[in-house]
Image (cartoon, rainbow, N blue to C red):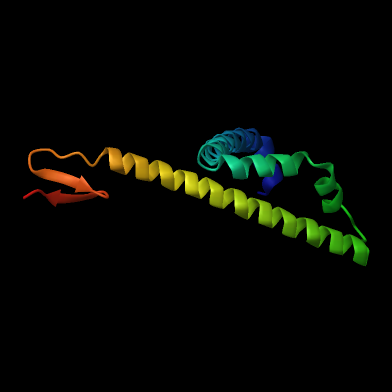
Length: 126
């Protein structure tokens, strides 16, 4: 009994297709959540990546089959530029996130009944 027999007798292929469809939907949903989190916590990086995806140069460079030495150098230069821009955007996003964390921790440094918070650590007041 091979695959053909199972498909003809029990119709397992449609069941597999349904399972695959459900798995794909689940995967796409998870990817959408990850993308939204990325946009939320790394807005500058997301903007750089969106611009790169919209840029025709990148799509053209990606599909060059028999590239010349000049085309390879151009591709490498563009890659290095992108790496620099993404690194800069990442550090800017990271700095902003750190500032937000510091603002939140300083606003939660209130004291309650002799116990206070200093830089996120509980301290006893004397």
